Image 1: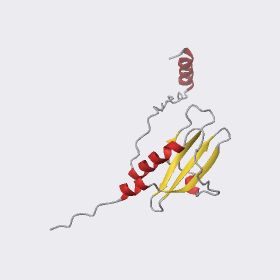
Image 2: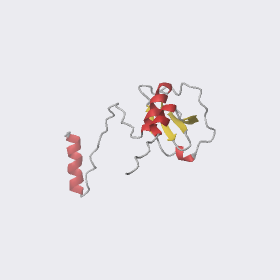
Image 3: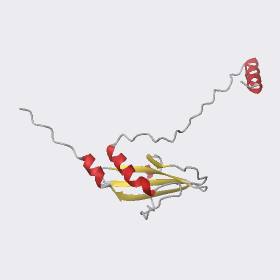
Image 4: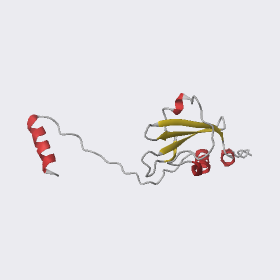
Length: 138
């Protein structure tokens, strides 16, 4: 503990004030967390090659007025800003019922926000979406 921090604690204790709460640090390991939903995992695998810190590298349609629910949730991360100071990060939203996919892009120095979509749900997602019929009881 530094002398300055110790002095601050002593002064706070003498004046009857509580010391400030401890500071916590979160370190990003760079290892993406596994996606629990197999449909979302499939879509993420298919779209990751087209996104990155320099933006979306595909001619996807941009929504003029995206749904408000896409403004307030991050979704599943597709990419991060990497080592690019004004880089972009993209997040995935999958609407399995409507068979539509949306990619939300945020970043840059000006803090841009774009929503790409609706994009079609990839084929591999439909295979993981199929369910077997339960066996009939005898």
